[in-house]
Every structure is written in structure tokens, then in C-alpha cells.
Image (cartoon, rainbow over all chains, first blue to last red; front, side, top):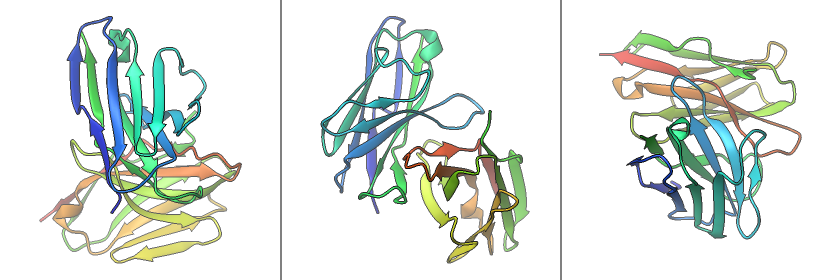
Length: 117
Length: 113
């Protein structure tokens, strides 16, 4: 089946640090990848849709200058949390869709637990 | 405003019995629904989906039922196995063309041997 690899799985760093998270589709090409955030006991919330070769589309309330997304190739999207603060501590997870068409399921990475001290 | 609701945070069933996980939605524009399973320290894994043109979709031990008039869907697992123990997420997307998935908060299923 489709495999999505996310790295790192866990990050602990000081406030003010910028953190980069990578999302790779290992056995398929993904023109579209998605970035989600999950707070404890809450549902996965879409942050942005990452499109290869173009600007990401951010959901309402998500700061694009805070959460920088780059999708430079068909197999890699990165999310950079700039100048991270304790309130950015959360579980970040990416997904990618195999093929075109809205009704193709998204396949998820294993997520990144970000803890800002 | 929670558009996709999974009102039971947890469910416990005996091995071999049926597990029924429920999901309600409020947005009448939703027309495609998915169930994902998540083990600890792993990402969600796609399980089964259903389009609003159907009211049932079956894949092995897993069956999803959709009741559009009630804005309700359910996932049936028969027979339940201990390896099915996981958190199950219901998700939906709308016919407006958006690729966005809206998730419920999940239901933790425990299948006891």
C-alpha cells in the first residue's frame, strides 16, 4: 500500500527555535499533500494543503508566515514552524493522496510530536 | 462547531462479537465519508469509505452504513478481533470540490480476548 514517511517523529526544543518537519511519499508521487495538527483529545484539524510547485493553501486562522510550507517535488513537502513558542506544542501529521480525484483516500505519516519548552 | 461528531470516546467489546462505531455529521454538503484506524505512535490508516450515492459498503469484516436522512454513518466490524483494538476516526469531505477532510475526535475500541 501507499507509504508516507514523516520525520522527525519527536522534537523537543527551546522557545524561539524554528523546526522543520519533512513528509515524503515513498512509493508514489503526490501532487497534493496535507498538513494537520491535533491537540490533546481533539480531532485532526487541517492546517494547509500543499501543492507541488505552487503556494500552499492555508485554512482560516492558520498563520502562513508562522507555518511555512514548501512542496518542491512530487515526493516531498516540508512544514517549518518558525520561531516556535510553547503554544505551538502539538502533534503535527501529514498526508498525501494517491492519484487525482477527491475520492482517493489520503494516506498518513506517523506524525511529529512537537514540544516547545 | 464540530461538523463531524463521534459521541462515544470509547467502546469495549468481546472478541468474536460485533463492534459498532457511530458517527454523526451536520454539514449536508458532505458526500464522501471515510473511516481511519489509528494505533498508538502511528499515523491513521485508511480503512473503508463510502460515497453518498450508496448506503452500504463492505470490505471483508468491515461494513460502513450511511443514513443520509439522519446524517449518520456507522462502521461494523464482524467478528471483532483483539488486533482491531485502536482509535477509529470518522472523516468527511464536501461536494463543493474541496479536498479537505473533516475529522471526528475518534472512538477508542478495545476488543477483549
